[in-house]
Amino acid sequence: MSKKATVKQGKKPHKNKPTSKKYTKYKIEGNVVKREKFCPRCGPGVFLMNSQKRLYCGKCHYSEFESKAQ
Image 1 (tube, rainbow, N blue to C red):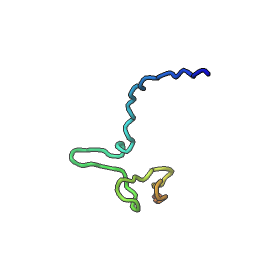
Image 2 (cartoon, rainbow, N blue to C red):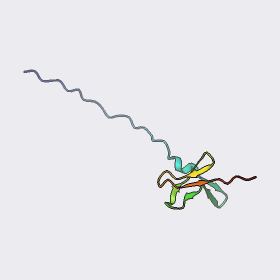
Image 3 (cartoon, rainbow, N blue to C red):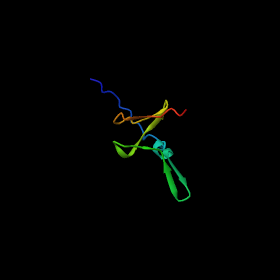
Image 4 (spheres, rainbow, N blue to C red):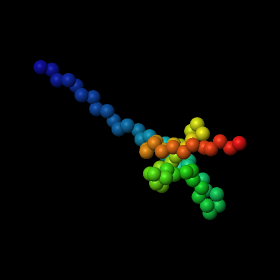
């Protein structure tokens, strides 16, 4: 019987993770922190996505449509 040779592998190099995209939703202007709109159902921390003339929550599927200004 022959034993299979096991090859030891070294540690993997550390890779930095990219920063979260949620920090792009906040803008600091002076002493005021401006933010995009939160979902009224889910509360603070869940942002509404701005897409195709509507605001949409991916968590609870809440939608707000922009009114047509004439």
